[in-house]
Structures are given as structure tokens and as C-alpha cells.
Length: 161
Image 1 (cartoon, rainbow, N blue to C red):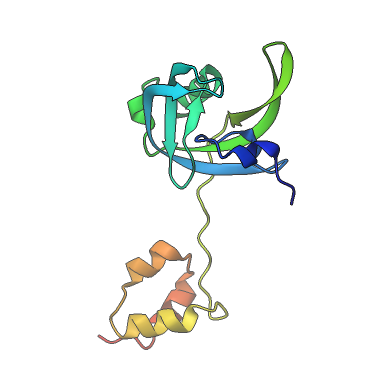
Image 2: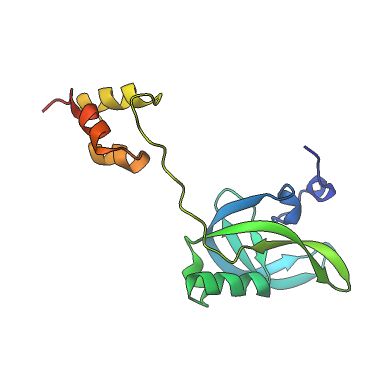
């Protein structure tokens, strides 16, 4: 893996340099605010900033704001909290030159697929024991795993009543 030169400056905000070529990253917006941002030239500018779960904040430009607004059907930044978007890096023309930019895909992220719990799964015996001991419920297991009706029956065979 190679290191983008911008990573060596440890900026306060996420940028296109944070993604590997061709990478897409699903992120969840904690909240969006208007705040003063100090640019590389030391100049302060009021920007729209999205704070993200487990990532540096993202400065939202007009293009990305329009995309979020369209994806979620609301122009209000307060309504964007808790929403997920997909980030990707691309080249754009800005200020008379081609530069890297971080953009938001114009499609909603797919929900994460839960793994299927089968007798071959490494967690099968733990789930079966925890269920039998009364430490977990079927509902809790279903929150973490997909499970067929026949495997659900098999899982419950030693369940204490």
C-alpha cells in the first residue's frame, strides 16, 4: 500500500487522499453543523461540516449537500443526523485545474448483510449453549444472524424451558 502525500500532514478533515484508488466507504453522519474552518492558508471560512462515526469530519461542499438532500428527501442539515452515505474519491475541475475530491455516491448504501447462523458456523455451539443457559433470546440471535426455520428449530432443541 502506498501513502498519499496529504496523509503526512495529518489534516483535521477527511479528504480524497483517505481512500485507496477505487475504494468506496460507507459512513454514518453523527451531525452536521456550520462552523469556522481554518484553511491551509490560515484563512478562516464558515463551512458546513459533517461529523462522522469513526472518521474525521467531512467538509461538505454544495455538490455533496445537494446529493444528501436528494438521497434523504430533506434540505435540512439537522435531518441528516444518523443517515449513511457512501464516500468515493474522484477527479474534478476546480479553480482551473483537475484536483482530487471526495464525493458522495448518488445512491443509498445497502444495509450490512448479517451472517447466516448454521451448524457449520463457528458461533453455532456458543449460540446453542447461550440459548440453553438462558443467557440470550432467539430475538437477540436474530439481531446478529440470519437463520433458517429448520436451523432455528435445531438451535432450540436443547433450550431450557
